[in-house]
Length: 240
Length: 240
DNA sequence: CGACCCCGCGTTGTATACATTCGCGTGTAT
DNA sequence: ATACACGCGAATGTATACAACGCGGGGTCG
Image (tube, rainbow over all chains, first blue to last red; front, top):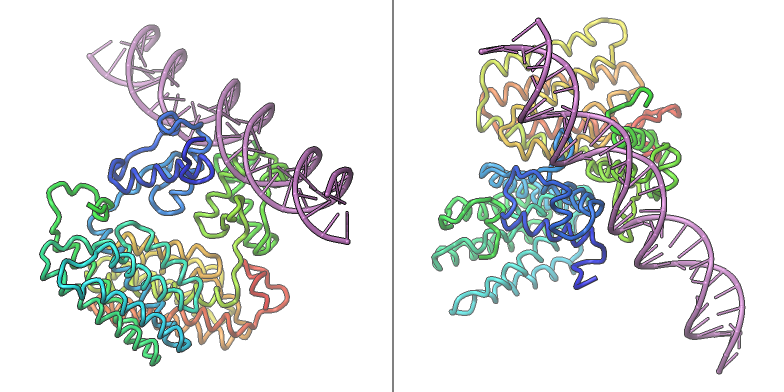
């Protein structure tokens, strides 16, 4: 086979479909027909079904009652709620972490990561947003990894997999540099406060911080500095 | 076909598999082989794959890295956490409901349901636990239905679908009648308080109540007054 | 003219044959 | 004796043919 994204045709098909959905080429509500997709992707129906199943597990597709799959549609409200929900779950994760306590090394390690993030916009030039986005995602991942509950971890992971609910989805939306810097500074203050909270076992504080932290994303979304080309929420995250 | 559980073979296979997993016949970690299951269920591999995919969506199976499916295993800790998580999500749902406000009819309707639940153990004889379980589930469902966030609703639904995280999973665990009655009375008080809270838009109170409410299930679990005959939901794994 | 039935096509459901992959064991060669 | 390689077998991956189902259009009968 030529230049497989993954190993199997099913994985490649899933990858392609996922990209198309995220880019908004397949808007919410679109019915996916096996045969059509099969010939577009140049594979048989079997891996297409397999791919659609996987995307349904991810929450990007829904099973139609009569059979078949439909691209899940997310309203603006859904996007807002998903961010809120991420805040709630991250808050729960942090609360449990705080209640259980964490080793000192973990605290120093994650503190170092936050210091690294500072470096992204300490420079007077324009901040390196790609790097920020990556490090920020690492921070959130590392934080989640400290949570003693595998169940909470996996459900949080699931919500974060929605393209617009990811912690760094709306970093890029801020148009004006001043406002963006303010957001980043606030975010960093919250990052440090979260570490402090779990280090000193302040569960309620950690939980509240995580929820408030998610509000930054929500505010960036609401600020809708995005242009008229906005059509599908999932598109919001598209780098652009 | 004879007496199909659902329409298609895939649905029937999913049903059968789900039952087997819940009953503990297929303990966590069991690798599911398509061919073996296909001949056991007397269908071809295709609907078996389809069924496994659906169960993976439900969270009962995991995809093995090398391909294929494995019965997801839940530790005691996972069960506790899933109940905690249900409390958190129900709390979020109630908070959002309270913040948004609900119509008066909805309040009276759900109040009537709580009154109905009273009837289950008003009788001096032994309470009708089957009916209680059913009505209790209705209460939780109806409450969730009031939530203005479809996303929160669906994630809550997802967690509740885990057999041991369902609101009425551990009602039956209490052995002694006195303790059980106490639990039920407490639960009813919380039910009413939740209604009151959403009616008067007390979001924080509603959220706290839902979390505490879930603790009843957790306590019933921890009390492990369960006898040897207990087999119910996926508890094979809990057994100790 | 209206309503109902039936046929045909499009779509998903199912079975099955064939391909591919990967691990494991055995055999041989050094 | 050890190491490497070959091959076999079990498992999933893939293609495809056929079945079943639903729905819409057109024809016919009342």
